[in-house]
Image (cartoon, rainbow, N blue to C red; front, side, top):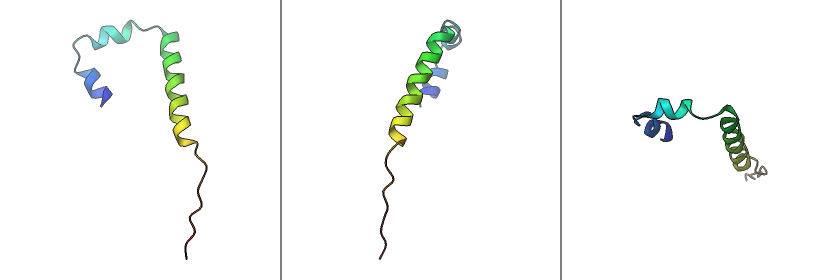
Length: 49
C-alpha cells in the first residue's frame, strides 16, 4: 500500500535521492524493531482432546 502510493508521486525519485544513508538506516532499524516486537510473542500451546 505505501509503496504503491509512493510510486504514484511525481517527485519520488528526487525525494529518495535526497535521503541520507544514515537517515535511511535509522528508519530501517526502527521498522525492524517494530516488526520484531509484534512477532516475539510467547508460543501458546493448544491442547486437543
